[in-house]
Image (cartoon, rainbow, N blue to C red; front, top):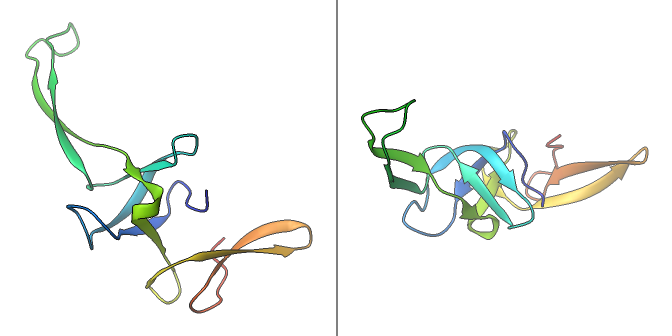
Length: 102
């Protein structure tokens, strides 16, 4: 996966189309990412010792990685990512402006 934790991304499809946020968690085996304030769900919580009241909580749900695009730190536009090798290390590169992302 070319999108990692703490990357800024923009949602391309779905109910939150156009929203930007930071990746909180990356789930490479399921090809999904959790983005801050995107794809919010309401979850019913049972009362526990830690939370005796219980009730409804709001949290982010994973979204498929194909529905988000990385926002380039230099040009500020959503872009695809290329991989370039420099001195034996892999570096992510913006397809629009050619700037290094890592």
